[in-house]
Length: 164
Image (cartoon, rainbow, N blue to C red; front, side, top):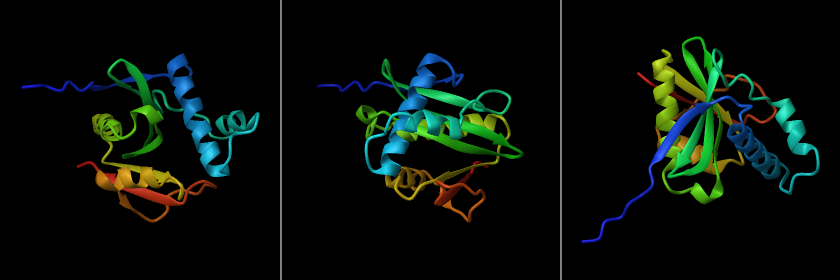
């Protein structure tokens, strides 16, 4: 009998300015810019987007940033921002070579565990219309579309999942 060993998904917290975190946040933002613009990012566009939507609040006491590893590989990240009674999910990203292997589910389980640990009763998020895969992932894991709870130039869909 042949057994198949699959690498485990592991998460750890990091400050957004740590090298691995900064690298993943830049990769995330590069993909967001390119998908939104439907072309390769021009010089300065990713830096401008990182400045427009900083991640420096994804650290205690305002939130956290999870790094996701698949086996020994740095595979992705996800952030949470704390709001009174709830948490906002942001910066959900998996490198292309790790997509389709269960990383999205592992990330969501980890962020939900962290949110519960700080007393959040739900997680909310907003996302863009062009991020179809993300919307599918959220719906598959119990996130339901809700009316807009925020305003922003890149928010087209809003989701929520009750944690209790």
